[in-house]
Length: 551
Image (cartoon, rainbow, N blue to C red; front, top):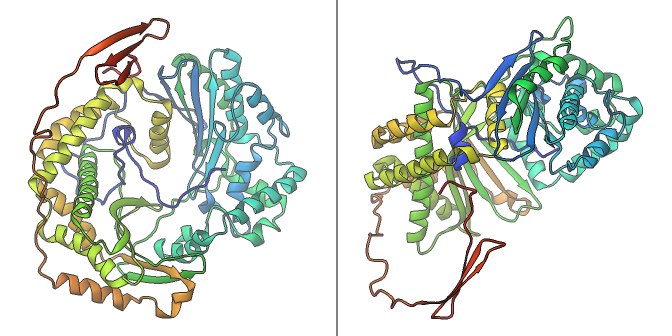
């Protein structure tokens, strides 16, 4: 029900909690450091005889509350030609009648229990996955048992009534209609290129009008029968619960789920790299300005060894260095010729990563605006980053790590849930905060500028490059070609570009210290544990201590 974006970022727990997001990264050679990451000792995992997987973790950050998520390795890439859009349709039908909650009884029951539809209770369907989320109170044992029953119903007990299917058809078509803006129209032209005409390009989760308006209920039921099965599902339980009790309840509720016989093989689809450059020009009447985007693609791999984790740390550093350099150069530029420019490494469906340079030049400044943005990237390629830049980013990241380590008992349950989703859906490992903290603290100082430049150059030397130009329909006749872009890049590469210099120098913040004042009045509001200070210059200061964080 939530809209699913095409670009995603993956990450281990520190990346999620500290706000440092990163993609998976290019394949690297196996070495002695290809030791598998350890498992978080606080996480209980298991697999039932039917293949159903579960992850349980006690987290008291939110008292009397638990997050229940059902993750299914089921998405639009599994649809047959006559089912395009039905993975998303099945997700909707799971809210329209299940074995223990027919028709709309599920939503009614949960709303009475204090669970809000949309804000709390929700689901999302993507290319490779469908995930259902249900946060519920745990102060009433019956709510937890019923919550697990709901998860069991979602896993394999949808009724899929023909009349309800017809009712929901209009809802789905309206949801699709609301998404038909300029972004959707252009993405349908650019995605086949970005996804290298792979199966992903032909299986957008929203589906096709001609299928959604004409499919028979039997096609929907066939999809559900084939793919909603325990060997493709996992239950994630994180919150204020007894782990042993929950594990027993899961075994009771989910052990008798059945896999179809014969079971269709669940193929893994990828975006194959071609070693070629691709150019696409799209226009739309609702687009006011032209944008230029260059994407340098590389194969991605899973973070589950010390070697891959170390490489991910380098990408963390590169991503932050690129962001900091952009800010530093923007503050020095008196006349930026673009409205916006971004560069960074991100991940794409189908086990592909990319370095993405996106520029929106000012009106009438297509050439110079693009060259100004590309020149910054070329400067980094030639000269790299400075030792001071790297040291500052390391200090910032280590400070964030220290803070995250201190607050490890204050982490919201949803952060753990997202990590365990990655474990099940993408094969990543969850080593836990203490391990991540110690590993990063021990290894980050030794990462060099040369290693960071090597990561960047791997992307910039890629032969798989996509160039996408999007602009107003009225300017279509005069818009850019691939030759224009390459000519401008060659011009920048032929320039004498000076190395980056940071003009900001550390100094005294206040040359003249202000004269000290006095506290003229102090009041304590005991009931609120609030202290109010009145200062001699008229300022009022209100102080209240909290225990939300350790410091």
